Length: 145
Image (tube, rainbow, N blue to C red; front, side, top):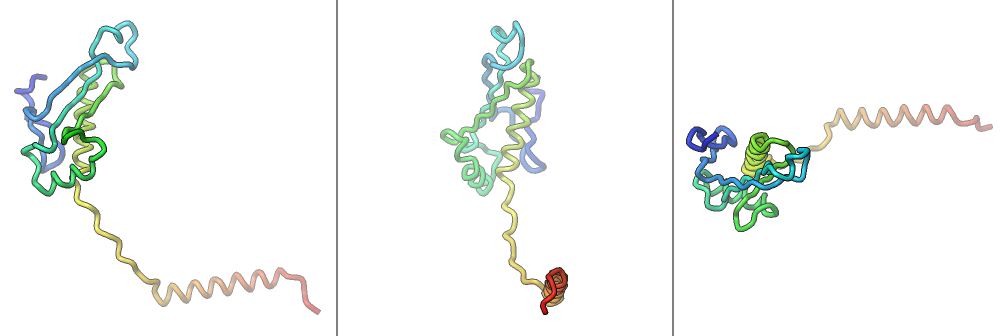
């Protein structure tokens, strides 16, 4: 589908990457394809310059650059797809993969766990269970004379 017909890559409700920021590269895939594997450029690479993107807020950009540090080269994120025989399906797979990566990376961190102490009732129940178990084991012993 030509870039002019697509509104962009929707990552989540607030973020949509415009097609103008995405670029494609195609090459021969090493996967299945029979005779066509050596002739068709079915492997798709989707390239997005995350560091210079206009759609991210400064906080989102900082989070994304920090969390995807191992995948970025000079702030550019590259996603490849070659699991399908058709280039179009590989393109769709690359788009979905990029959207999932970005959505996960810009998501705010979950709140830290607040440590809690067991309630008094829980402590009593635990001690009662231990006492019952002790009694059961004591009854299994041979009698003392």
